Length: 142
Image: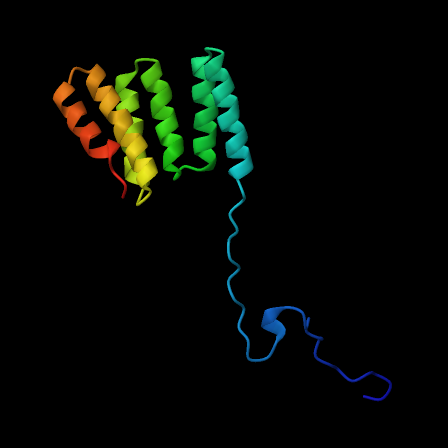
Protein backbone atom coordinates (compact mmCIF):
# COMPACT_ATOMS: atom_id res chain seq x y z
CA UNK A 1 0.00 0.00 0.00
CA UNK A 2 1.32 3.36 -0.87
CA UNK A 3 2.40 5.52 2.08
CA UNK A 4 2.69 2.67 4.63
CA UNK A 5 6.07 1.34 5.64
CA UNK A 6 6.74 -2.30 4.77
CA UNK A 7 6.03 -4.83 7.56
CA UNK A 8 9.23 -6.22 9.05
CA UNK A 9 9.77 -9.03 11.46
CA UNK A 10 10.68 -7.81 14.95
CA UNK A 11 14.39 -7.78 15.65
CA UNK A 12 15.70 -10.56 17.84
CA UNK A 13 17.85 -9.89 20.84
CA UNK A 14 21.26 -11.05 19.63
CA UNK A 15 22.59 -11.38 23.19
CA UNK A 16 20.39 -14.27 24.24
CA UNK A 17 21.50 -17.81 23.36
CA UNK A 18 18.15 -18.72 21.84
CA UNK A 19 18.40 -15.78 19.41
CA UNK A 20 21.49 -17.24 17.79
CA UNK A 21 20.54 -19.39 14.81
CA UNK A 22 21.35 -23.07 15.36
CA UNK A 23 21.72 -22.73 19.14
CA UNK A 24 19.16 -23.99 21.58
CA UNK A 25 18.61 -22.43 24.98
CA UNK A 26 20.62 -24.26 27.60
CA UNK A 27 19.16 -24.71 31.08
CA UNK A 28 20.68 -22.37 33.61
CA UNK A 29 22.70 -24.11 36.28
CA UNK A 30 21.34 -23.61 39.74
CA UNK A 31 23.95 -21.95 41.86
CA UNK A 32 24.23 -22.98 45.45
CA UNK A 33 24.96 -20.13 47.81
CA UNK A 34 28.27 -20.07 49.60
CA UNK A 35 27.30 -20.91 53.15
CA UNK A 36 30.79 -21.63 54.47
CA UNK A 37 31.33 -18.33 56.26
CA UNK A 38 27.86 -18.40 57.83
CA UNK A 39 28.44 -21.97 58.98
CA UNK A 40 31.81 -21.05 60.47
CA UNK A 41 30.26 -18.10 62.32
CA UNK A 42 27.56 -20.38 63.74
CA UNK A 43 30.18 -22.91 64.84
CA UNK A 44 32.10 -20.18 66.65
CA UNK A 45 28.92 -18.97 68.35
CA UNK A 46 28.19 -22.54 69.41
CA UNK A 47 31.67 -22.89 70.88
CA UNK A 48 31.25 -19.65 72.84
CA UNK A 49 27.85 -20.78 74.12
CA UNK A 50 29.33 -24.15 75.13
CA UNK A 51 32.15 -22.46 77.07
CA UNK A 52 29.56 -20.26 78.79
CA UNK A 53 27.55 -23.34 79.77
CA UNK A 54 24.61 -22.40 77.54
CA UNK A 55 23.82 -25.86 76.18
CA UNK A 56 20.53 -25.12 74.44
CA UNK A 57 21.98 -22.05 72.70
CA UNK A 58 25.00 -24.07 71.53
CA UNK A 59 22.69 -26.74 70.12
CA UNK A 60 20.59 -24.07 68.41
CA UNK A 61 23.61 -22.62 66.63
CA UNK A 62 24.69 -26.03 65.36
CA UNK A 63 21.16 -26.83 64.22
CA UNK A 64 21.13 -23.59 62.22
CA UNK A 65 24.47 -24.53 60.66
CA UNK A 66 23.01 -27.93 59.73
CA UNK A 67 20.05 -26.25 58.05
CA UNK A 68 22.57 -24.40 55.87
CA UNK A 69 24.66 -27.53 55.17
CA UNK A 70 22.59 -30.62 55.95
CA UNK A 71 25.01 -32.99 54.23
CA UNK A 72 28.11 -31.92 56.16
CA UNK A 73 28.91 -34.84 58.44
CA UNK A 74 31.14 -32.97 60.86
CA UNK A 75 28.24 -30.69 61.82
CA UNK A 76 26.18 -33.74 62.78
CA UNK A 77 29.13 -35.02 64.82
CA UNK A 78 29.32 -31.69 66.63
CA UNK A 79 25.60 -31.86 67.38
CA UNK A 80 26.04 -35.41 68.68
CA UNK A 81 28.93 -34.25 70.86
CA UNK A 82 26.82 -31.51 72.42
CA UNK A 83 24.11 -34.04 73.26
CA UNK A 84 26.70 -36.42 74.71
CA UNK A 85 28.02 -33.63 76.97
CA UNK A 86 24.47 -33.16 78.23
CA UNK A 87 24.05 -36.94 78.83
CA UNK A 88 21.40 -37.18 76.10
CA UNK A 89 22.77 -40.51 74.88
CA UNK A 90 19.91 -41.37 72.54
CA UNK A 91 20.31 -38.18 70.52
CA UNK A 92 24.09 -38.41 70.69
CA UNK A 93 23.91 -41.85 69.07
CA UNK A 94 21.27 -40.80 66.57
CA UNK A 95 23.24 -37.78 65.34
CA UNK A 96 26.58 -39.61 65.35
CA UNK A 97 25.05 -42.35 63.19
CA UNK A 98 23.75 -39.65 60.84
CA UNK A 99 27.30 -38.30 60.62
CA UNK A 100 28.60 -41.78 59.75
CA UNK A 101 26.02 -42.09 56.98
CA UNK A 102 27.08 -38.75 55.48
CA UNK A 103 30.85 -38.96 55.94
CA UNK A 104 31.48 -40.86 52.73
CA UNK A 105 35.20 -41.57 52.40
CA UNK A 106 36.31 -38.84 54.80
CA UNK A 107 38.26 -40.97 57.26
CA UNK A 108 38.59 -38.12 59.76
CA UNK A 109 34.84 -37.54 59.86
CA UNK A 110 34.15 -41.28 60.10
CA UNK A 111 36.67 -41.72 62.90
CA UNK A 112 35.31 -38.78 64.92
CA UNK A 113 31.72 -39.99 64.60
CA UNK A 114 32.58 -43.60 65.47
CA UNK A 115 34.63 -42.57 68.51
CA UNK A 116 31.72 -40.48 69.70
CA UNK A 117 29.48 -43.53 69.27
CA UNK A 118 31.97 -45.49 71.37
CA UNK A 119 31.78 -42.86 74.13
CA UNK A 120 27.98 -43.00 74.13
CA UNK A 121 28.00 -46.82 74.15
CA UNK A 122 30.45 -46.77 77.07
CA UNK A 123 28.11 -44.51 79.06
CA UNK A 124 25.22 -46.85 78.28
CA UNK A 125 27.19 -49.71 79.81
CA UNK A 126 28.12 -51.43 76.55
CA UNK A 127 31.80 -51.56 77.43
CA UNK A 128 32.84 -54.38 75.11
CA UNK A 129 31.14 -52.76 72.13
CA UNK A 130 32.76 -49.41 72.92
CA UNK A 131 36.17 -51.05 73.25
CA UNK A 132 35.84 -52.75 69.84
CA UNK A 133 34.83 -49.49 68.14
CA UNK A 134 37.78 -47.63 69.71
CA UNK A 135 40.19 -50.40 68.78
CA UNK A 136 39.19 -50.18 65.13
CA UNK A 137 38.90 -46.41 64.73
CA UNK A 138 41.74 -45.02 66.81
CA UNK A 139 44.25 -46.51 64.40
CA UNK A 140 42.19 -46.12 61.21
CA UNK A 141 43.95 -44.22 58.45
CA UNK A 142 41.52 -44.84 55.57
